[in-house]
Image (tube, rainbow, N blue to C red; front, side, top):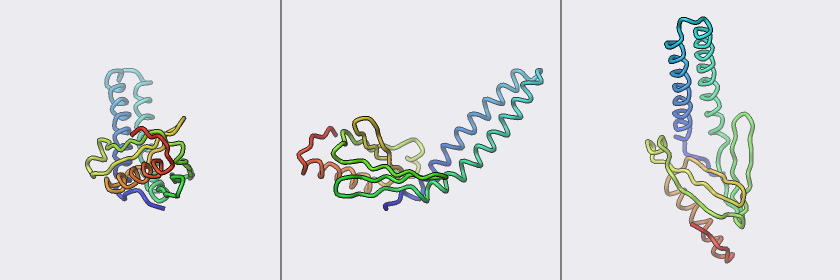
Length: 155
């Protein structure tokens, strides 16, 4: 199994911290606008506790998810492993691939990492975060196999 890059945890953690800060700031706004009401003070307290718990649980989950996330190339499929507290294995038959995207998110630019998304008839699967070399290699591998099978591909 090919593992995602080690900095993936950092990218996931930055997303978690961003979400937590937004929720906390909304709680602060509610508190300061409606501070004269007891329910606003209680809501702020609950939002603060919830935000901290969310942050801690997701930082732990991101570390566990990293250990069990990766992909594997076979002759006719890409197998994607994604885990955390539970693990999933997705087999994407190359004959069903319709489109590929290689992209960088805001936080992945900080580490020069990329995601590749594989689109099939009714679903899509993302492998992230990997180096541009790995993403290009994976994309070219899929395109070459489709070309050998005479399949039509929309890049």
